[in-house]
Amino acid sequence: MVNLKTKQILRTNFTNGKTHDFKLLQEANLRLSIKTEILADSGYQGINSLYPNSKIPKKNTKKNKLTKEDKKYNHELSKKRIFAENAIRELKVFRILSSRYRNRRKRWCLRVNLIAGLYNFELGVVGL
Image 1 (cartoon, rainbow, N blue to C red):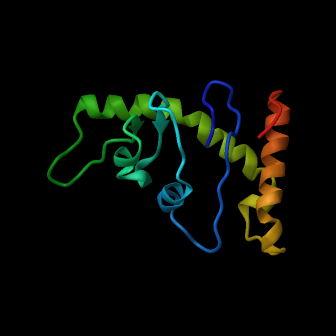
Image 2 (cartoon, rainbow, N blue to C red):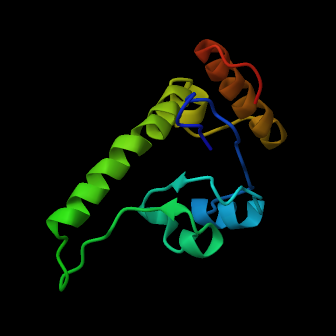
């Protein structure tokens, strides 16, 4: 989870094995303010039922093509979401996150949080 104003990484969440991001979000049981706006990618279909103030891109189907308004909406949403994607890219500069992790699983969460802390420190923001 990334704050779009400060570009600070606010939260990381993990589980053992392969788990879809949306399922991980559901299991996290986050208590967010109603005013908090969530910008997610198209993998989070159904997030509106959990968080009413969330936005995901409109999808194209064979029968219903995207209108110009839908394309403009998707473009505006992606312009806002790029900051979160850039934060993920910055974390993956540390090779431990971009390749297969071959060390102790117990320390995976600690190492990712340390890397996120280093990223926040580089931004001039303290704490995770």
